[in-house]
Figure 1 (cartoon, rainbow, N blue to C red):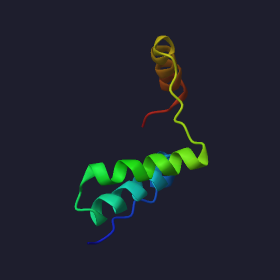
Figure 2 (cartoon, rainbow, N blue to C red):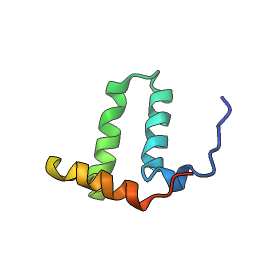
Figure 3 (cartoon, rainbow, N blue to C red):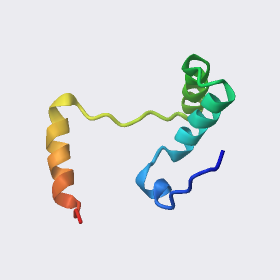
Figure 4 (cartoon, rainbow, N blue to C red):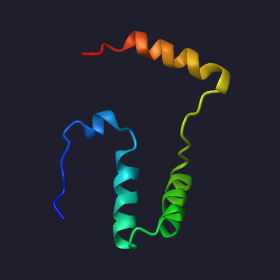
Length: 73
């Protein structure tokens, strides 16, 4: 299988390493998701990683602030 290279992937996706780890596990285990979920969970737990999730009440405000700060081309 040819590996596709997106040169902006690391900049655009803060979870690129975890994504690659998930893809490798899925490929190795015949795309059985049940065999791969634990590996990613254990890796995140060992590194003390938790995704930031704002309160439900704050999400719309945060999205609007983000839209104002980003220049769309």
